Length: 307
Image (spheres, helix red, strand yellow):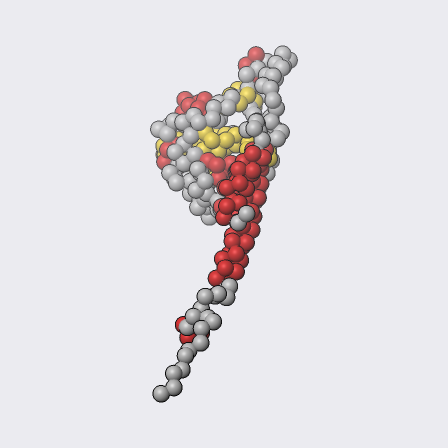
């Protein structure tokens, strides 16, 4: 069987090897719905509902008005560049511990992604304490930009303060529920980053106080609709999916199957191409059986007649 005729048979065989029911889930995905966390009845009633309710795809209120660390009045939509994703942190600047850990992890994670702040993505930090001031916001911005290694990037990582209704509109849009504890004079809140698309929709939640560079980079590439990052990043998104069970980007079974099949298919096509080329060369180099040099038919002699 010649190489060109073998190609359809090979392709059919490869398709037959694909699993009929490969689950479109990350390998670590739980196969059942996670039970809701048990209520902690020892907490005051006002703190019972402190949590994050994921609202993927929700549009943030772009007309909500805030004040920057420099005292400038801005709409939230003014901070969205329109062509790159945005990382948002909700903290308060007088927080004694957790907020500082979140912002430190945010700065480290963004620095280690290999993406450029202000070119590939922007960042916004919003205080949910209406008592915070522009002076505090400017101090926090200065410190974390220095930790990030780009003290000049003030326009790329904005620190905001605002009034309670405006703050609540942003927090409600992303599902961030917090509460003020009168006993401790502090806010109770969760720790997370929110990755937004260029037009202000919630694309991904990243939880905790440490944000691995791979997870943050993939979240930014995903939120940027694959216009951010490299071709290799887009290939990684084929093989990795965000797993709500582990809250990490985990290997994606179907993605690995697809990549493996493409590699096998590419190898087979390359091999058949080589064999086909050799076969054509072999046919073209065969000696002629019905002709000789000079164009005279083989086996005939020229007759000479004497005069």
